[in-house]
Image (tube, rainbow, N blue to C red; front, side):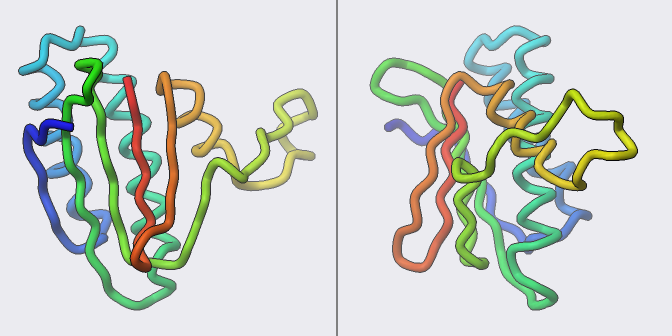
Length: 135
């Protein structure tokens, strides 16, 4: 993996714009199309909102976003936090067929991430959640 850029800030909604700007800028520098940059931004934002809202359960903590190129020259966003363990790959797909009023709340953001990215990887290492979004 070749690191392009990274940013570590408190896991707060107010920092979302800085993270998304970093990811967008790095993707643009790698020649990613504008439409794909938008999709990457949506997936990254969904992951970060979950971290900001749920990972630290009222406590404070940081999140680090790294932009990289892997050995196959694919653009990779790695998101790392020290919050509660959460393997989003274990979340089932939401029911999209029932009437919206009858659906369970939650899970749509994880579904969007999985749909928009070519590959999603998760691991828990050294008390950290490490999410890789590969495009």
